[in-house]
Amino acid sequence: MDFTYLETLSDGYDKEQILSDLILAYQNEVWDYALSLTRSTHMADDIAQDVFLAVYEKLHTFRGEASIKTWLLRITRNISFNRRKNSFVRRVLLMKELPESGSNSPSAELEALDNLMSSEAWRLVLQLPVKQREVMVLHAHHALSHDEIASLLRLPVGTVKSRLHHARIKLAKSYEGGQEHDGV
Image (cartoon, rainbow, N blue to C red; front, side):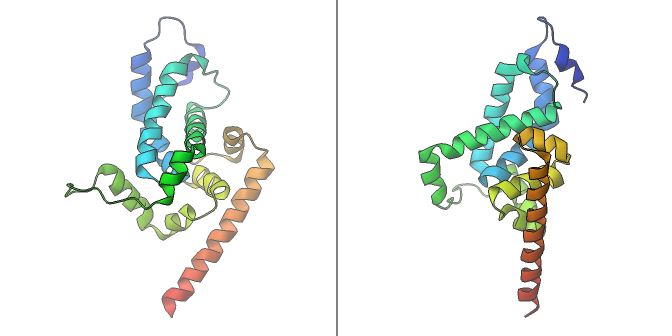
């Protein structure tokens, strides 16, 4: 979908329809990014809802300086980091998630997480430090350019490139180390 019209909204726009279109187009990317930042399906669910609520309330502030996708991912990042700062959330994240009782079939979110985690590469990516994991996910999964990542994270492009380079080195070392253990 093309959302360039959002740059020039007038007073008579249909916020509900725009929000519906944005959710349809970007809900999976917002949820995936929230998951990569929090490593919790429950928090990713809550954050995705909060992102689209914030978008609904602040739709008129979109200026088109970045793509709509980059804008949504920036909101996702801000909400995720605000959640992580909450001391209650930090304490809860220290505890392991308990399996959901009374459910015979996995939820769509758990299936998505299983699919993501089934890939050895993504398992290793999710183990990276958050700064490196974030740039790797934005680059590899969301296909953002270095400039778009720099804009979203409000970092110099050189810092993005450096973090991506270090993430790739760590991934290569982790993968090689895993291969050695598998062959023994």
